[in-house]
Image (cartoon, rainbow, N blue to C red; front, top):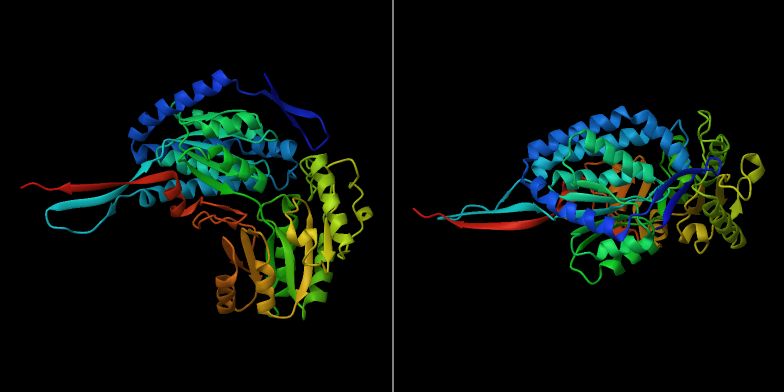
Length: 462
């Protein structure tokens, strides 16, 4: 019997400990989900919506405790942790409201003597495998719409954030969700793969690394089962020559360093028109220097630790590799006294004139690091932005909306922003291309991946 331990990045203490589910417990959970889903599917959409609205109320009432838990489990500064509670509620309530339209029958049009329509049927049991960096925002993307569509859900959360999964379960139970419709399993990697391969799982919603996505693909390869993959990013932005410079600096720095850079859609590759390169980099460095790195439980802290020491060490190695390739560090680690080797506390860094072949411009760096280089034209910016194995989000700062739309049509990405970044609008499809994944969550389109079409072709007898 294995044990799952959560070591807090705040001070290295053991924060939570859970016993991994046994084979018998996994089997029982899958059986319960299968049986419960049939009854849940039989409930009305209005009844599901009412229950999930109660879930939102329960979640909101626990907001302070949830925010505190985020700081301890993954290091988010307590001053920012409540934003995840608000974002989770925004997404949940949007998807609840969107369900009636998204799940409505599709009329195939008139045909004499016939009634024809397409109905959205639930898939059955959805297995959500969620990551730790935004533990509620990531899980809610599939959990709430899957339940609204009539599916049962089994949630396996990261070993770093097991209490996030349990908070979902507590709130859903308090809202009156029937037993078995939503369950939490604490699993090893091996058991996670076994669950994916089980015939009682009808869809897998995975968020994590590219390597993790490949493991999920392999585990599902022997079955005809849908897989949604939200993977990594090395997201680019372009500061055009007509940009509002101050606005661009403020937004881009926040987009690159929020959550200590631990975001799949955090900004990492910054391309600036040569006419604005010097003032942009000067302004960015000045703003980054204002971050206060330290204990995330201190309300004055604006930059917390990385999730674990090994993650910080890996980012330090990526920075050294980029510098060895020719990038110039704009900041000294000593400017942030809390940054110490052998701990998860890592100073932010901006790498100037980063070569396109350097780690910061090629690899996902899950930390407070970004690279910046100058470009001479829109065409060069697009070419640089597309020169990546990833394609999750991209953004441009400009006063010319027509130019932004034209550039957006050329950039290979799942979401394209103008004058903003690092935000998931629940009304829009959340999707990646290339190594950033496949499938879709959020918006009415997200419901298509959690249901299957069933056609009704009815001859009317007179």
